Each structure stands twice: as C-alpha cells, then as structure tokens.
Figure 1 (cartoon, rainbow, N blue to C red):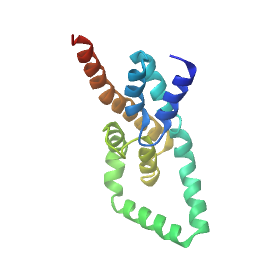
Figure 2: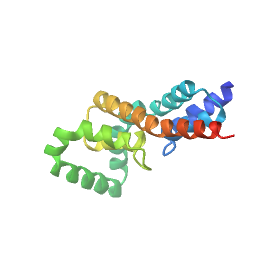
Figure 3: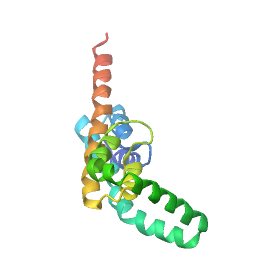
Length: 156
C-alpha cells in the first residue's frame, strides 16, 4: 500500500459515478487491507460533499443572473419542487439517505448534494444523510467483493 495508490483510491472515491462504492472494491483488488481500502474510499467520497452543498446555491444564482435559459431552468425546477413541499418536509432527509445508500449509477453523493440543494435541505443535515448513505453504499458493494475474493482464495 504505497502513498500513490492511496491517493488514487481517494481520487476515485471523490470522482462522480465511481465514488466509494467502487473505489473500495478497487482498492481491495489492488491489495489494500479491507479496513484501509474502506477508509481511503470513504475519505475521498466525503471530500466533495461540503463544497457541493455550500456552492450549489451561489452557483445557481450566478447562472440565473447570467443566462435566461438557466433562469427558466432553475425556476422550473424550484416550481416543481414546491409542489411536493409537504412530502419533502416529511421524508426529505430519509429519502436523501436512501437515495445515496442504493449503489446504482447516478445515486451517489454528487447527485445527493444536488437533491439536497433542490429540496432545500439544510447543509449540515444533508451532510449527515449523504455521508451515512455513502457508507452504506460502500458496504453494500464491499462485502460481496470480500466474499467473492474469499471464494477464489478457497479454490485449489
């Protein structure tokens, strides 16, 4: 486990659509002990969450001020969101957690941060829900990886 490989796992953990759910099994295949693989993958996966949560609002405001198309787009998104405000207030954080926890393409921390922004979930609450979801998603993909590797080690 050299520092370059650890940084590679952190980078892959932070990369959209790869994230910890795939960075951790990748690290295990590279020869990392499972605990270290999980640590580096999750660290990488958690790095972009706070900047995303804090910058999506200002970025959308800037885009809206610079482009009529962006103004229409964000107005449309927020209008549709407000129609479901009661459901979002009731299930928003739990739905956010479940959305990120299911390891399918497009359901990671990057999309979760965008979802938190659109549904106006407070950034601290969103960070906890997204982080917990990322850990669960990484576990869901890592545990079968360990089982498959153990199966191959048992073969003669």
